[in-house]
Image (cartoon, rainbow, N blue to C red):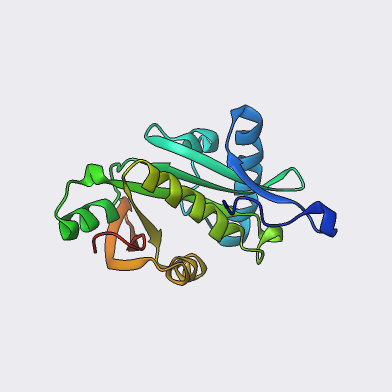
Length: 186
């Protein structure tokens, strides 16, 4: 059974479900949540000029939202490797395959007022299932200062591939933790 739904309204609890992101209304709601996340956590590190475009991304294989009682409270995307992604190259080198065998889990965030209910894990699970269904191995990069995200990935069994420094712009160097999803090649 899929774990895209974790609570039941009949039990008197909010209904939580993960579904495919669809349309402009979903993107608008996701941008609203992203604004909250950025204020609280500083994610994304560099606020995009066009947040909806940043969420959509040209290389997107899929995107999902988490809803609580019909209100969008989280998001995750899955994409092909792009410029600046470190994890696909690290994983493919270790696995002895091309980077095209990897799928990058990205744009994961959960509204600050909705945390602590397993929403991040549900979103990650959905992205991982999609990667596997496409015959791809999930990987991701996260800014090292985001300790709660790194802790989530490690709790879910993701393997740390490396910690690397990357230049994101003139005078802006960031430290990234690169991970490979559990199972499959190292």
